[in-house]
Image (cartoon, rainbow, N blue to C red; front, side):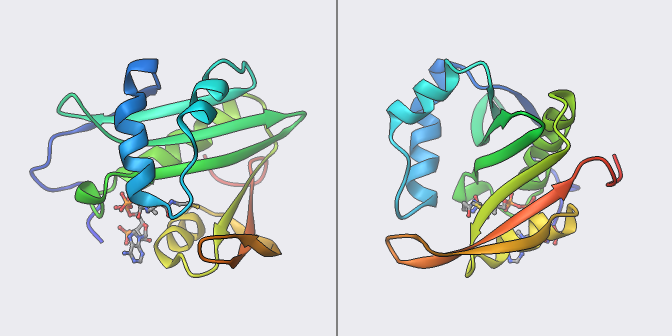
Length: 159
Ligand SMILES: CC(C)(COP(=O)(O)OP(=O)(O)OC[C@H]1O[C@@H](n2cnc3c(N)ncnc32)[C@H](O)[C@@H]1OP(=O)(O)O)[C@@H](O)C(=O)NCCC(=O)NCCS
C-alpha cells in the first residue's frame, strides 16, 4: 500500500473540534455496520480522560481516532478514514499520533478490539507493533463476529 509519498495534499492530525462532528459522523457511518451515535462522540469530547483526534487534509476531515484512558491503560476505541482517502497513509498517521497520545498520557499499554475479518485494520495494527492477546466471542453484531483483542506494550516498543 502507498503510504503518502504521492501528490496528495499533506495530512495534519489535531484535536477534534465539535464542528468536525458532521464529517466524523459521515465517515463513521461509511466505515461501520453499527456506527456510534453522534451523542457518543459529543459525550467523549467532554470527558477529560478521552482524546479525540482528527486528520485533516486540504481543510477537509479525512479521518479520526478516539482513545480513552484509565489508570495506566489506554483503549483505542475508534479509528476510521474516509473511504475515498484510504490507502494513502492516513490510517497509519492517525495510529502513530494516537500511540503518541497514549504515551503522553502516561499509558503503559494500549488496547483495542478489531473484527476478526478486518484484515486491513489488523495488518495496520500488527505493523505498528500490536499483538493479539485475546478474543471476545460474538463481540460484534451487524454482522455478528468475534473480536480480536490487541495490545501494544508502550514500555517496550520503539517510539
Ligand atoms: C483500517 C483503516 C483505518 C486503514 O486506513 P488507511 O488510511 O487506508 O491505511 P493506510 O493507507 O495508512 O495503510 C496502513 C497499513 O494498513 C494496512 N492496510 C491498509 N489497507 C489495507 C488493505 N486494503 N488490505 C490489507 N492491508 C491494508 C497495510 O498494512 C498498510 O500498510 P502499507 O501501506 O505499508 O502496506 C481504513 O481501512 C478504515 O477506515 N477502515 C474502516 C474502519 C475500520 O475498520 N477501522 C478499524 C476499526 S478496529
